[in-house]
View 1 (cartoon, rainbow, N blue to C red):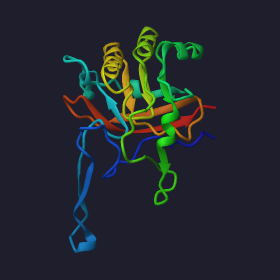
View 2: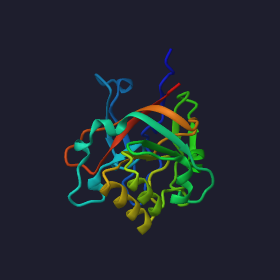
View 3: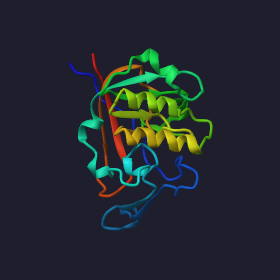
View 4: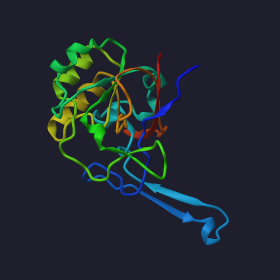
Length: 222
């Protein structure tokens, strides 16, 4: 009997955490059965890099591939959750012990995961706590170089950016995306133990876009 799938994506809600300066998420009910309309109808306005989302190379590279050109295999298949303890940024030195190999899909569970909470109205669902925090754990540029040298195909992390805020974060993105490594950010990994999983993470197919929201799920490999 196979293990059950576990949702590791953040629900999209009005007021949820977003990158400073980016548009806030606004989910509005335009028509409502409760108000006597013939059906329910809603609209959603947001930055494409909010919540659980995938970064395309175009996000940091002028002539990079857009999200609709993402190879499906980059976000489907065997993945490994690696737990990095502490609140310091992830460096190359901290990755060497994990024996990361070519072609792997690596998801980093860090101290960021404590910023997820369980919603009483939706048992089992995890949300990013409202309000942006500046001291999130991210991947330092030398760690990005380490992963690029090992030619992994996917890297994910449990907050809104794989790289630190500022110039170092820009560099981390450029290194990974220039190496053809696809990035998934905003994962909810609080319940996930380190180990091997099956991953499905499919971003919306938006032609010419630098990124897109995604639904991500994991299933333990026994």
